[in-house]
Picture (tube, rainbow, N blue to C red):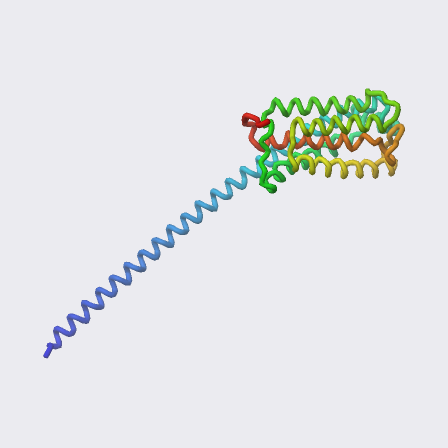
Length: 251
């Protein structure tokens, strides 16, 4: 028969081994929990930094687009005023640069919205825009857009319908030359419709007026200007979203 001392020794040894296993498991669990907390903290900090970088980049792109849109609106509006295409009240003409002060901010805001939407829409549709992705192409697109605006006030036709058809062809040519994407065409049409409706409301409420209106209260070629402007601002926004890195274009 086993003696009592042997029984007590075996029980104490088993208890000691069990205690060591328990403490070891507890130590591993605490270390694993500590490592998980460290990893979670690192990931959260990385995500926060990435979020801050993306937000700052979005703000910078928006400011650039706002500045470009406001400048183009100021220059092109002055061109239309000089050619008596648009007429403002006398008290408005006495303000800064002899133009309506609210036009550059409104157009700048619209340019920022449209320019930021273009790359987002490309990403949502899953078709990254790769056609003529370089700043030289963007500058040519801006030059053509300014030329279309210049043609709208310089060209003389027998009626506004002929001028509208000519500018529509030029606007489609601008899209085909510098864009050729479904998202660009769709967003350009949306921009033209919304901007034309907004302009109609402004003219209807007497904020300013167009000479020889033939499309309700405005000129029939105005949607073409808004369409080409949307495509131009969209190309600027896409290039800014790339970070300015030039890539070979695909014809």
